Length: 491
Image (cartoon, rainbow, N blue to C red; front, side):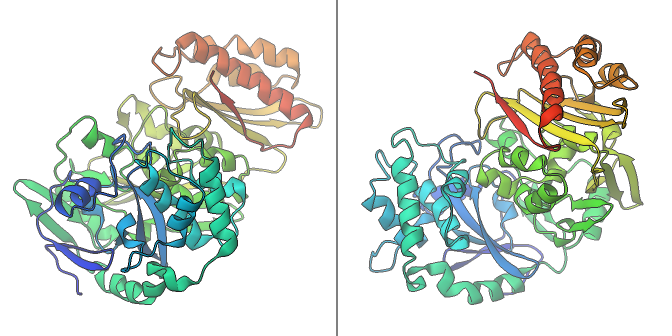
């Protein structure tokens, strides 16, 4: 296959697909079920929460073919160019022989009502492809994004452990068998220039490069730019928004670079949470557990740190710790680049410092000095796969004589934007790092924040939780290793 400038081309299981008319808001799930009648992929929540719609997406990343589980319910069809879409129907042999993962699920009674089973199978299949000997913790992390109300998960985990231990011959596996062929096809499908697809009045733009993206936004400043669609997908499935035109950027390798140096880590705007995990966890160990709690595995495979920032949500998980770490944002347009502190990007609810035609290109996270203490705490109703009620990041430097020389505290979920606790910081700075100082500083939270009451938490709870997190940070600093993440779960 060769690229074209008016069609979206990808591979569905073992079939080449060419689409010339794609509505900007058509989801991959709807297309699979309604147009291709591949009904093994289910719709449960339509918001990327339950995992019943899980499919694998293969893509070339730095020349290597990588397969990841994603939520088809919020993944938009227009983002499929130059990918390999694998559904549960592709796993079994033509003679009906079950894939080892499927057979293990049957042998260990990992399915009861069966509705969620195909999504669970696809998540475990993705793990089977990438990890020969997964630990129980790795299996459970893989299943974070798959909800099952019947089994209690124990037989599912047992099935995953058993199939990993047995590792039947790869001859039974459709992806392993065709990996070289698929890689070659996807390489040929990489866009060399912008692809523009229309469906009635709806328009999709797939830029061939970051320069093409800048040109497209200069011409279409009101276009919706979509990377992972973990939030935008809900605009479509829950709010029924009509997005037009749409610019997809998930394929742009230029936005997926990770640069590590002694000065810090630069993360391209198109880097997913899964891609960024290793580099950020090594640079700032406190970020490890936070990233592991952002959505489920499917969401982390789709969502990008750049998108989490650009979206401007007051409850995004990454802005509070990145602001506390002094992150610098690079914005780009046809006119060039400019850098601003991440903190100043957020102006007011729904308003960011992004000029017409600009997009987030990267974020630089400075290295944390070894002498400084840093922690981030996420408070949510569920331990896994839940949106924060509040998220607080704490950074402090203490002199040899025990005096606070720097205090940076930033919260999400406490205001209309991610916001620093300026009065609390001032109450700590220059004082002895003691429990008395911390208790006195707690009284300043009301000056910094007037949180809202919503279904995630009351305003009173948020204020009390924020105060208690400061106290917890202090207590941990007295005896536990710096840069440790702790978490709270709302009862």
